[in-house]
Amino acid sequence: MSTFLNPTAKRCKLLAAAFIILLANMVHAQTAENDYTITSVDKLVKDFVNPNDNTTPLNAFLTYNYVLANGKWEDINRLSSATNKRLQTEEQGNKEWLLDRTIKEVLVYKDSVAGMVMADKNPSYTLWFFRFENGQWLNVGEGLGGKSIEETRQIFFKQSTVELLETARRIAQLEVVSTDTAAFVQYLREHGKQPDAFLLDALSRYKLVVYGEIHNQKASWDLMRKLIHRPEFMQSAGVVFLELSMSAQPHLDSFFNNKTKEPDIVLDIFRKEEMNGWPDSKDMFEFILDLWDINYASENKIKVITADFPRPFHTQITTKEQYQAFFEDLPDRNLCMADIIEGHINATDDKRNCLFIVGAGHAYKSSVLHRSGVQQTGRSAVSLLLERLPEESVFSIFTHRPMVSNKGYLYGHLRKGLFDYVFAYTGNQPAAFNLHNSPFGRELFDGGHIRFKANAGSYEDNYDAYIFLEPLDTELNSPYLYELYTDEFVEEIKRRASIIGIENDLYWGMKIKDLNREHIISNLKKDEGRKRWDFEGK
Image (cartoon, rainbow, N blue to C red; front, side, top):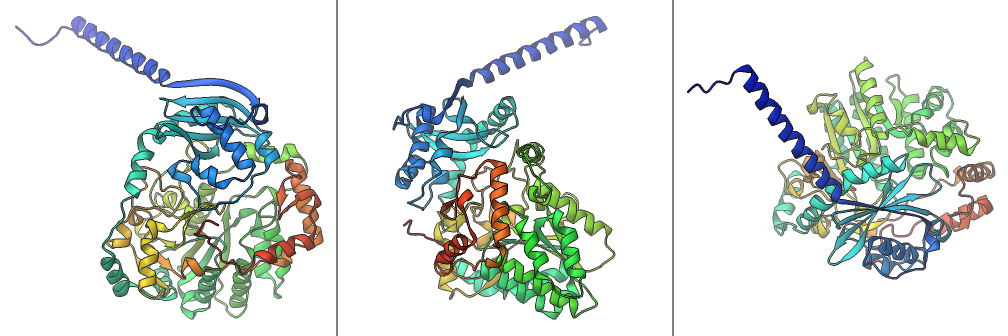
């Protein structure tokens, strides 16, 4: 009997197969739908009495917000997942803001992950995640939603599966830390180099050296200033990219093209970077002034290029509608950085290489998504550049820090203190070294916001090198750029706050609408010179 089918029989078999596939997909879709529940709420947080209970997602969210509003940090940690227990024990949130927000709906996936869809003063929605751990609903953290309820739901649907299936596994893996400290000590002693010499060597060999810094670290900017003053720097590097708004480029060009140094131009740039000024300003300010001095004394100029997305206060925003319009079409910061850097490298005739000074969260090389569902790519600037430039031409460096968030929340030491122990054992001397094929590089990465992602990998998966500058336990707060806060700028801060609708929020311990220059400076001076990191949780 022939095994070949005639055309009619073959067509029937194909139709039957297609029907089976369609039916299977319908069953899968129905099962997927049944995995989710959506409960409409549409009430303000303050419309609910504090339930002091976390047996349901809604009650856990309400309890968490009431505790946060009252600053009972020991209870906040008790109500938080392992992914975001912080060391700080005293902090009080903006009570009016926390309790005046609207809970639109509660999304739950497989009775294991929940998302509160929130509407507040931001024109987009936010998502506040909770996860069911050890018989209770615990806070995972707040993130950006979409521009609509439906878009926010889709973000939750995409992220909830990851939350459920991957995060718990990664948490368990991060608990395992190497005990072979001798291997780390030996590697550091054999391969550790002076950071400035290490950077100069990298700049002589790689088209783009990315210095992944932690903001507001004086020792880090001291290293950068020492680096640019080395004669070899100007021979190897023709460009310095900075994490400043691309809108500032014409003003920065004017500063460097002037035959006299005018620091006020740079001060004005910093005033337009954030609502209340660029926070990492004092040391970066001096770094930029040093670059002017170096250029003035040489014909072989260094080009300084701003690589970040345009900030809203570089445009003439005068209404809340204009401000909201900016956030309605928020640029992808990392994509913007990658576009600017790639564009310059491909267009320049300068054979010298480039230095990019940027927060380490923009500098990791793996393709882990950290803003999925919100920004266009959700990836780091360096991971995007690796797709556009030869991989061997990009060299990314991680600088030592604690586990800390972008807002300054402290979670502890890297690798449970292993790295700090090794640096202390070898005398806490500044050191730079390659991560590949090293015990440091093989450790699972926990130095940034992607640490709980299942595919975050190890340190060597994300960076090429590591720099240690000073022990965290003795690091002091950086000095502030007091010249930034003129009477005129304080009034501008108030104007911006009024446009956004946050004039009653507390900044520098006072409502923004009541601020004055004297109060800001006196408040900042209280903080200057203190230890930066509080590992005791006091």
